[in-house]
Length: 546
Ligand SMILES: Cc1ncc(C[n+]2csc(CCOP(=O)(O)OP(=O)(O)O)c2C)c(N)n1
Ligand SMILES: [Mg+2]
Image (tube, rainbow, N blue to C red; front, side, top):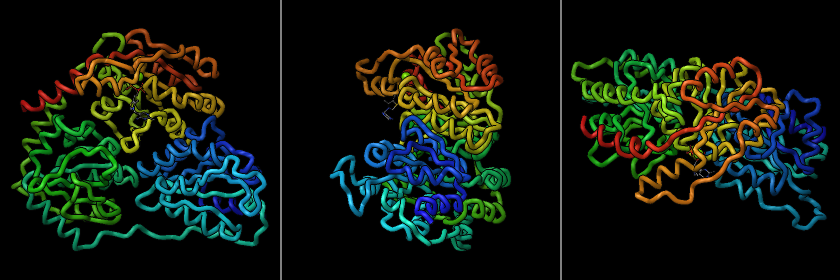
C-alpha cells in the first residue's frame, strides 16, 4: 500500500471524520489518498482557522480534531492554534508536509525545523522517516492528544515518505478505562469535607470535558454544598441552580471573592492552573481538595493539600455516596453573597440606551439561545461580561478561551461547533478586532452552508486593552481604528449582513436570523464607556460592603 493511503486508513481507524486545512504541494499524495476516504476535507482560508476548528472539534467530542498544512509557512501559521489546543486541553492532531528528507534538490527553500518548532506547543511531535512506522506514530500521536490532560500533537509527513510503498498494517485503538481514584484518597476527602465548616465547590474546565454533569448535579443536590464555576467550567451544572453563587470571571474583588474568603475548604473539580486563577491560596488559609484526572500542577497560588486522582465522574459518585451532610456546615454567608451578586447581575438587563450596553446585550443573547444553544466567544472585554452575566444551562454551551485567550478563534470555533451539532443554534460572538483576525473564514462558513449567526460588537477599538489602560490610570491612547462596513462585507461573501440600530431591535433580529438558513452577520454598536466604572470600581467597592 502507498504510505499516504496507509496514513489515511490509520486516521479512519481512529474514527477521524474531518481534516481541516490547506494542502500544499508537499501534501498532495495525502490529499489524493483522501479522495475515496470517509474523511471529509474542510478547506479553510488560513491555517489558523483550520487549527482553531480542529481544536474546537476536539474540545466538543473528546476525539482529536485533525488539521493539515504544508511545510514552512503553512506550519508556522498553525502555531497559535497549537498553543490554543495545548493550553486549553483540546485534543488536536496537526499534520504538516515537508520536502523530501532522503534527497532534497531545493536547498533550504521553505524549510524550517517544524518538529522542533512544535516541541514546546505539543505533547508529541515527530517526523515520520519511514512508511512502516506510520501506524504506530499515528496511534501514539492520537494517544497523546486525547489522553488526560488532552492537548496538541504533531506529525510531519515528508513528501518522499508519503509516496513510499509499505506492507505495514494499521494498529487499532487500545480499549481501556480511565483508572479510578483510590479508596484512601476518597476517604481522606470525605473526612476533610465532613469536618469543614464552610465547604465550597469550584467547577473548572476539566469537568466540562468528560460530561461529569449528572454526577456533579447529584453531588450538589445531595450534599447541599454551594458552588462557583471558572470561565471554562461554565455549564457543567446548570447555573440556574439555587446553589450556584457565580462565575469567577474576575480574578479578585468580585462579590464571589467574599465567599472564597469565607470558605475553609474548596472542593476543586476539574480545575487547571492554565485558567486565570479564580482564587489565590495562601499559607494558613483555606485548604483545597483537587479532584481531577491528573495530579495538580503546582503554582505559587495553587498547592492543594489533597488529591483525588482518577475519573472525575466516578470520584464524585463515590463521594456522593459516602458524604453525610453535616449539621455544623454553615452556608449562610455564601447565600448572602449570592443574593447581592444576583441583584447586581440584574442591573441593566433592560437598559434602552444605544449603542448597546454589555448587560443588555448579554441578557438579549440569553433570551434567544435555547438551553442547548452554543455561544463561541472570541477574546475581548465582552468575555468578562458573558462569563459573569450569561447563565449557562448545559455543558459546553459557552465556548470561551480562558487559557491562551487568543483573539481570532471565535468564528472558527463557532463553525466547528455547528459542524459537530448541526441541529443546535450556534452563535459566534466577536469584537471588531478579534473578528477581523480570521474574518476570511466567512467564505468557508458560506461554502459549507452553515446556519450560523456571527455577532460583531463594534466599538472601533481594542476595547479590552482600553479598559486595562484606564484601570492602570493611563489616558486613552493608541487603541482606536476604523472598520469595514460590516454589512457590505458580509454581503460580499454571500452571507447576510445586518446592523442593529436600537437596543430593542437586537433580540428580534437574532430570532429572525436563527429562523432563516445561512450565515448571518450582525453588527452591534456597543458602548463600553462604563466598563471601567463598573468592572474596575463599582463591583470592587460594592462587594467590600457586604
Ligand atoms: C492574538 C492576540 N493578540 C492580542 C491580544 C491582546 N488582546 C486581548 S483583548 C484585545 C482587544 C480585543 O479587541 P476586540 O476584539 O475589538 O474586542 P473588544 O474588547 O473591543 O470588545 C487584545 C488586543 C490577544 N489576546 N490575542
Ligand atoms: Mg473592539
